[in-house]
Amino acid sequence: MGIACLFGHKWDGCRCARCGLQRNEGHDWDLCKGVCLKCGAKQPPQHDWDGKVCRRCGLMRVVAPPKNLVVFAPAVVEGEKTEGDDALITSAALSLVNRATQEQFMLNPRFQKLYAKYASLKLVDQMIPGGGMEEIEEWLSKETGNSIDEIHSNESIRYFHMRGTDYVRSGLRIRFYVASYFYNP
Ligand SMILES: [Zn+2]
Ligand SMILES: [Zn+2]
Ligand SMILES: [Zn+2]
Image (cartoon, rainbow, N blue to C red):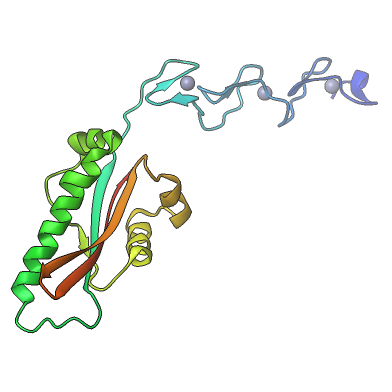
């Protein structure tokens, strides 16, 4: 330290303009490179992503495509007799998922686009017999690492769901919940 700075340095950002001493503050960061333009200090690069491209330096990145999960929760309506109807219930349940995902959700252009691009034709990733929306969302949250709030905030953008009841035969109804969630892995 020069005598000139005995009573304090003359800081110009991270460097003393008089004696050249450096300090770890006031850097002049090139954020994209993670380098201080004045002293060469380093930090992890931070780009300003606008989708795939950095607004500042134009770097392109690979964005992982979203994945899709379909969850289905069917249950026989309480009090209705089901003896011997197992096969009937199973096939009715499957046709309900089909109807929900391939017809109802498809009415939403956003879903249609995502589905065409990212969803495979497999129907159900997880079946939760007797469950409801709460169970479905808990499962989605565990599977994707997204919080329930996050999942809700994606409603109509990437999270589609519906509920309904339907007759399997006269006197036997099943109620169901079905959800389709696109998430970024
Ligand atoms: Zn100084
Ligand atoms: Zn610096
Ligand atoms: Zn950049």
